[in-house]
Amino acid sequence: MYIDILKNIVNHYEYYKNIAVNLEWAEFNSRYYDWFQTYPIGIYVAVCKFQKGYVKDNFEQAYMQTVLTYMAYINEFEEDFRNTPSDELLKYMTQAEDFYSAYITYEELRMIPVTEEYLINQIWFYAESNDVSESEINSVIPYVTVAENIEIGGLFCRDHTFISVKDNSIMLIKCGAWD
Image (tube, rainbow, N blue to C red):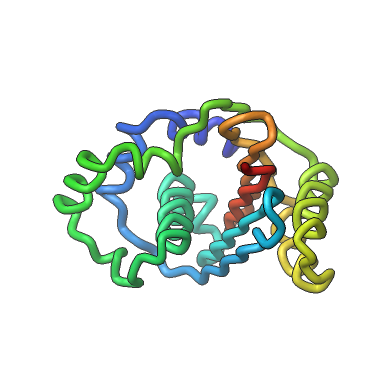
């Protein structure tokens, strides 16, 4: 279900930009995990938990909020980035297309469903390679279970972006061997 909607957004920068500049931010809790401690094996995880049913009813907007907040976290933006006026955001996204598109476009677009077991194994492999504690790893596993799990793509064969989608949460996982 969500994979079909993602196919309209991912690698379609103008569509992505249109969603972003017209976005009305919802209330959600977010949590970020920077588990890239052991070069070149790394993993980043972003979890956004929305109100019940929000993701199901507003997937494009929820996905966009997840991507933008992940981007803001990685680049250490101020929290008020959410209040950027639409016309200003459009200007930024037009002038800095390479920067913004890097979070939504993939050299290797995979867009394939993956099983819970496969994604859990990927999370464990990359997290354990970075000496992440079992309890910390287990804190993100519930977002994978009974979810639609998709491998979106990557820059090359050892680079992966996954998403786990439930009716009220989205977890974005970026992992790989980066050198």
